[in-house]
Image 1 (cartoon, rainbow, N blue to C red):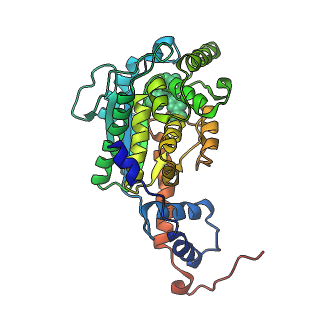
Image 2: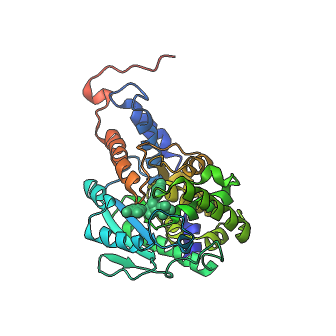
Image 3: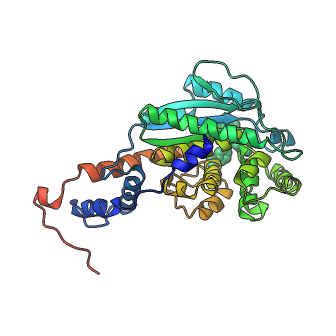
Amino acid sequence: MLADTLASLTPVDANLAIVVQARLDSLTKPPGSLGRLESLVLELAGMSGEALPTVTPPGVIVFAADHGVAEEGVSAFPQEVTAQMVANFVAGGAAINVFARQIGARLEVVDVGVKGDVEGAGVVHDKVRRGTANFAREDAMSLVEAERALEVGIRAAERSHAAGCRCLIVGEMGIANTTASSTLLAALSGRPVSRLVGQGTGIAPVRLAHKTEVIVGALAARCANPSQPLELLAKLGGLEIAAMAGAYLGAAARRMPILVDGFIATVAALLACRLAPALRGYLVFAHRSREPGHDVALELLEARPLLDLELRLGEGTGAALAFPLLEAACRMLADMATFDSAGVAGGGTET
Ligand SMILES: O=C(O)c1ccc[n+]([C@@H]2O[C@H](COP(=O)([O-])O)[C@@H](O)[C@H]2O)c1
Ligand SMILES: Cc1cc2nc[nH]c2cc1C
C-alpha cells in the first residue's frame, strides 16, 4: 500500500499557472495586489489540477499516540493525558473541535497508538501498538510497525477524500511528541539539539536541560541514518508522526492540498518529503509555532508559513485557523469581477 501510494504521487501541475495567472491579472485589482493570496491560489490550482480550485469542505484528521520516552520526564503533563484528550476530542470539547466546527470541517480522530484503551464509536480504532518503546533505551518500534503506522495515515486520508473533502488538515495529540520530533529533526538536520529543543507543553528550564540531555543521549544510542526515513521513524518514533506522514502522502496521491500545522506536523512533513520529494508541492504551511525547532524544520522545507499567532498547541489548530485564507484565495479567483465584465479600465504595473 505504501509503495502504491508513493508510485501514484505525481508532481503538481505547473501548466495551469499560465491560465490562472492570466485570470488573476484580469480581476478588478492592480496586478499582484492580493499578494500571497495570489501565489496561494496558483499553488492550489497546481495541486488540484483545476483552473478554479476549491478547498471546501476541508477534512481534519487528528492522530493520537503515546511515547515511551515520556517515562524520562520530558513533558509537563502525564502520559494519561493523551487518552483523556482523545475522549475530549470525541466529546467535541477540544480547541480543534471548536475550530473544525467554525470552518465546517469533517473531523476524524484516529487512535494509532494510544497506550490505554480509548472507548467509543467516535474514534477510529487503528492501533498499531500501545505506545512506542522508550527510544532513550531501545528502538521506538520495528520497521514493520513504522510502515503500518504510515498506512494508517494513508487509509485515513483516503477516507477523507472518499467523503468529499477537498483539502486536508492533519493534527496530532501525543504527550512527549515534541521530544520525538526534536530528536527526528536533529537526526535529519544535523543541527545542535540545543537549537531545536523547546518547552513543548510548557516545561521549566531545569526540565528543558534534562530533555536536551535525553535527546542527545538517544541520538548517540540509536545511530539513526538520516538518509533512511523509515528507519528513522522506527528508531525514534512517533506512531502519530508516522501516520501524519502517511496521511500527507495519501492526500497528495489524491491531489488534495494539505495544510500543515505546527512543529510536530512539520517534522512529519519533512520525513514524508524524504520518502517522496514530489509531496512538497502539495503542502501549504499554516503557521509558525512557538517551538524553536519549527523554524529549522520550515527552513529545511523552504517554507514560509501564513500566520504567526504564537501558538504551541498542535491538534491541527493552527491549520484550521489558516484555512479561511485558502478559501478566500479560491473565492477571489472564482468570484471577483474582471475588468472587462465590470467595465473598469485596466492598467499595468509601472516599473
Ligand atoms: O504543534 C506544535 O507546534 C506543538 C508545540 C508544542 C506542543 N504541542 C502539543 O503538546 C504535546 C507535546 O508536548 P510535550 O511537552 O508533551 O512534548 C502534543 O500533544 C502536541 O500536540 C504542539
Ligand atoms: C491539555 C493538553 C491538550 C493538548 N492538545 C494537544 N496537545 C496537548 C497537550 C495537553 C497537555
